[in-house]
Amino acid sequence: MLGVLGGGQLGRMFTIAAHQMGYQVTVLDPDLDSPAGRIADQFIHADYTDAAALRQMREQCAAITTEFENIPAETLALLAKTCPVSPDAQSVAIAQNRIAEKQYLQSNGFSVAPFAVIDDIEKTHHVQDLFPGILKVSQFGYDGKGQRQIGDHSGLVAAFQELGAVPCVLEKKLPLSCELSIVLARSANGGMESFPAIENQHVNGILDISIVPARIDATIAQCADAMARRLADALNYQGVLCVEFFVVQNDQLLINEIAPRPHNSGHFSIDACVTSQFEQQVRTLCNLPLGNVALHQPCVMVNLLGDIWREKTPDWTRILAQPSAKLHLYGKKEARAGRKMGHFTVMDETAEKALANALRIRKSLTT
Ligand code: ADP
Ligand code: MG
Image (cartoon, rainbow, N blue to C red; front, side, top):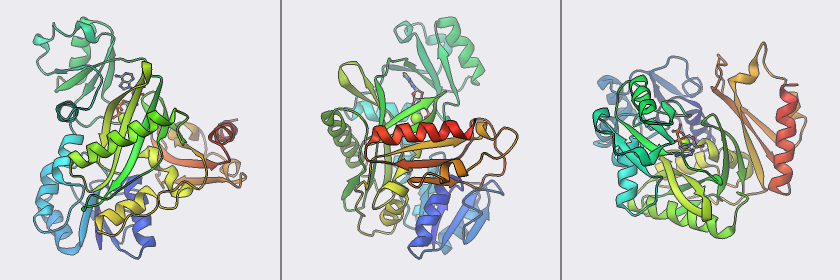
């Protein structure tokens, strides 16, 4: 019996991978109707700090992982007293707080976007150089939520209040030549496998499309891969880790943020790789050998957000009619704007062909 904290789509895809390998799964989530909870062997409906629920997890699970970085790090530390837990509380604590994350990255020699910690708004007269910038809450932001574009100091003051006057980081808004991610799996003994570099396109701060392999110079891809591996080593990380990069002018690579779990940009691996990011999560959690992550074919993953539901469910035959396209739906009942409802992956001889086909399919869903 494996345990997973969080019942979203990432937990659901972890559960499917674990089932495929013969494991049972216990899911804990505060939401009564969660995508993973629905297919779990056992569902514990409780808060992430509920002592009785955590005791039950410790007693019945052989190992526990997380699908969500906002699990209190103390919860992971408590579970780890009597049960193998990966990733560890310390890595999650860094990834769940933008201030800790940026400071950790900087102090370990990784480049990040110019930033300042915004804590006391009265002491922010030194941040002019960061305008135009993006103010981001340090905790609990995702899919572009908890962020505001900032043009000047009065805008900063207003946005800080609007975001609840909680600790934030202000980042300089950079002209991006592209965004990349590296998803890797690292075992307890330090062995690592990383997927090919992924090219990511975001719309309104939400991942829209991932293209694999990324259409970039091989040396940039190698450099991103080496940075992600060095970071995983520095964290002594066990599990699946995603490192998001900005590529800025002169092909300089900056680390945007990290996710201590499988990542939306790695979903292509389910259909296009020998071993998926979720199977790697099972393997690292259970101290099993890592799988081969070779790509069968170039591919493109397109997110399906609630926006396209409108009056009725989209006509999925538009996707399924393409033999090399694979549809994944997460079983969420309510389609809301900006909510990740599913995705599809299209494979082809080249990334360009896959992209053209994916865009055509996506367009046909709404026309
Ligand atoms: P989230 O946790 O919501 O993914 P990110 O910090 O990754 O937050 O921001 C979401 C997206 O917003 C990024 O992938 C990028 O497209 C854009 N973005 C964020 N920070 C910057 C920046 N400093 N300069 C330019 N674009 C940015
Ligand atoms: Mg991000």
